[in-house]
Image 1 (cartoon, rainbow, N blue to C red):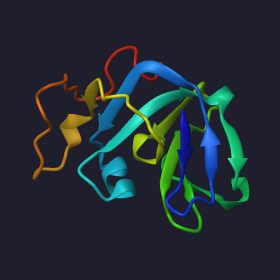
Image 2: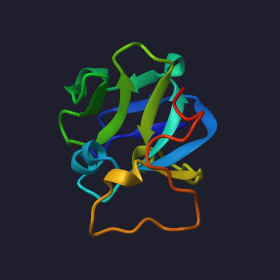
Image 3: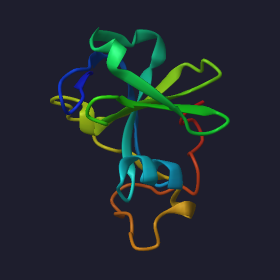
Amino acid sequence: MHGTCLCGGIEFEVDEIPGLVFNCHCSRCRKAHGAAFASLALADRATLRFLRGRELLAEYDSSAEGMRTFCSRCGSRLMNWQKSDGPYLGVSIACLDGYEGRPTAHCFVDSKAPWHEPSTDIPAFGGLPEGMGD
């Protein structure tokens, strides 16, 4: 997967973990993205390569477990990862250029925005479904 931020200052590549794409409805993702949910593709953290702009990457310590990253110049939300050096990244598919993957599930719908109803064309889970993010 190849991605860039809004201003183009950050460019990166990472290897996708096929089939693990989801819409996250948790309150942190909603606030970070300013939307009803964040669409994220899980990727192999060890394969992350910055092609340019690594110095523009800013991090936000959003919880005891996770970090969220964004471009310090344009504010684009790019990815998040576990502080424990877990093997996964959650990459914002909105920042992926030419990406054709589709979400396979809605996650954390127990804390979804009260003004939004997730589509019913994919499964919905109160938290992370078993096997996602392990």
